[in-house]
Image (cartoon, rainbow, N blue to C red; front, side, top):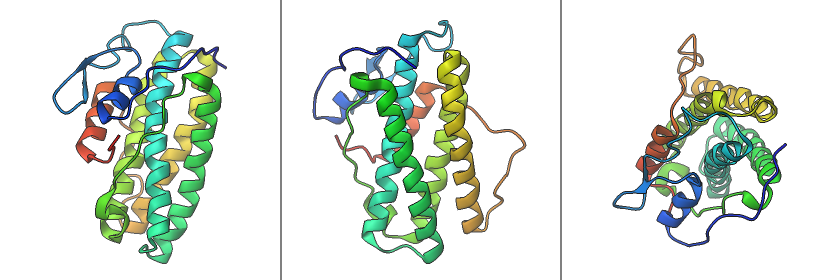
Length: 204
């Protein structure tokens, strides 16, 4: 799908990780997060190089979701319905990570470390966080779809539909409307990164 070369920089801090996630560039603000990351996404024509930047953004989210579900299952505090959801969604997220890592090859961003605090031991907080993460995944894929080359877009479309099913399923478990809008929102790369920053889950 994509011809990819040697990976990006190394480093152990959250700033270094997010710098790698924003492989296109951008400016770093206090606390190590990226402001103005992916500046060429909206105006630049789709290209293999841009596919790499976008797929690393989505891989960041997939790493986050995969780790969230895995750690929640290990904590053993979920209700039966939430446990079943976490098992299924977690398996899907692992498959998404494997798919993206294979597509990116050595250009794939390094897996970060996470601290989910009590969101993995408190069922109410877990379900609320799961909605946030699944919605973020859908909005990230939607926001970058027009910036991908056609082959990569076709592959990404197979993932975003599954993320949307996750979002509907966890809402149903919570007793919320599983399909609250007629159309899904899309977010820019900057907005996605800012949302991830606000969670405080990435520790390095």
